[in-house]
Image (cartoon, rainbow, N blue to C red; front, side):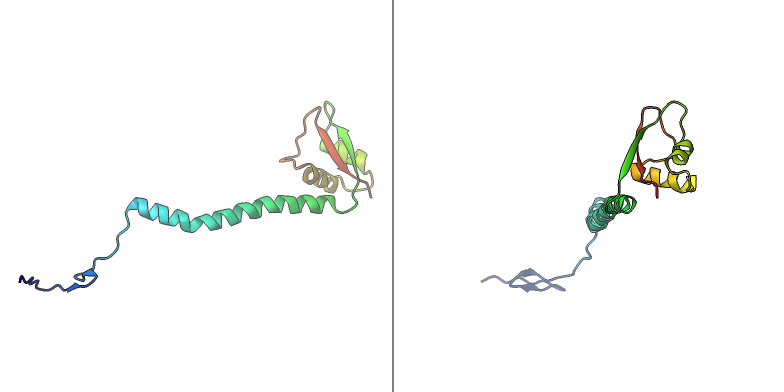
Length: 121
């Protein structure tokens, strides 16, 4: 019969139950752990941003909206197009509607560009 003597540690049926060490993550482990934790937040933010574009387009269009289309000529500006579209309205408001309706990044237009115009009120 043999005996094992261990001072300061115990053996159990499941294995060694000695001094417990603290879990330490490497730098790579922290990056992976943080990325997995942040992934749902990133997906939610991306879907919110993409969904907001559709909602903004729905607000600009509205139910039963009708459009006219114009092709931008050489030297045309959105100000001139807005004044011709709705002479009684403030051109700044009409320009904002044209920008939102067509998804433009700025008020700069190029010759040959086709624009949807909101119906005059």
